[in-house]
Length: 264
Ligand SMILES: NC(=O)c1ccc[n+]([C@@H]2O[C@H](COP(=O)([O-])OP(=O)(O)OC[C@H]3O[C@@H](n4cnc5c(N)ncnc54)[C@H](OP(=O)(O)O)[C@@H]3O)[C@@H](O)[C@H]2O)c1
Image 1 (cartoon, rainbow, N blue to C red):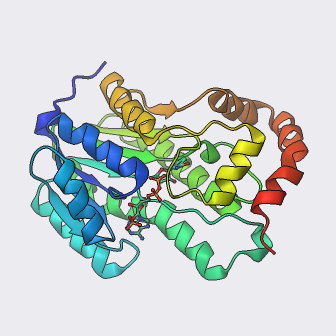
Image 2: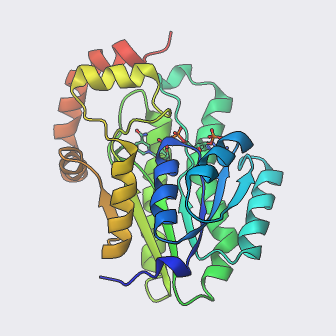
Image 3: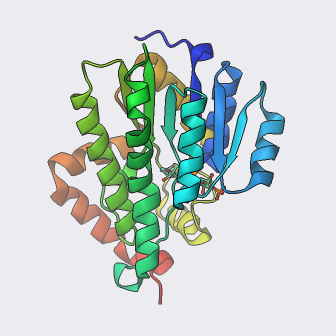
């Protein structure tokens, strides 16, 4: 158990305007955290700010653009951010051979390079603090290679591996690094096709508040890794130890997966 002094923290939250980001923002603001909220729409940021207790900083920026990244890093340094939640993300489903090369780059940048770059740029500052926190929002798909989601899976596997390396590398520092893996959650990252596929396969989809609650309890309990949902967390473990079993299960579901997610 680690005592976390929420009111002492100033947090840079990426993807604050998204389904999960909004709930994380509400949970942290309710605990007295000062937030630097990022997203690409000023209107959505202002709407979010209106419903939050306290006063927060709004940063409208596309983090895949150099100018957007500079704006956010500069503000994070000026406001002496002590917590970074790498939550912004995107997905485009479909068979790999139909993926546009530009889409591949956007997914790799947004889900993997961007959290790494932001962390790198803020690390010196974090290492001077008594307590600093980084949370990387991964996915069940960071542990299970899922058909028609191959690039998204690659980014989240990468995020998980990078997080684990950092956790070990900075074990003797004041930096606490966490990996949080939601399962399917009801937000706009999931296309109608993905939602319908989940329904057809009987896959549970959580409300985004479930993810925010998990994040709060993960930090309070100082759990390095948190996987949300059963049977997903069991499936992730089985996939690590006996991937052949999961091959069989997913290949059985392949016609259904392709019916919804294959692009033509
Ligand atoms: N929902 C799920 O089923 C699920 C499951 C597992 C993990 N996750 C992970 O949870 C995290 C949050 O996703 P979500 O479900 O809340 O998705 P979402 O509702 O689509 O929100 C995505 C957020 O990321 C922001 N974003 C995307 N690209 C950006 C860029 N280039 N620059 C700045 N901001 C950018 C979006 O900003 P705009 O509002 O400006 O578009 C939005 O705030 C992601 O990392 C996702 O991979 C989600």
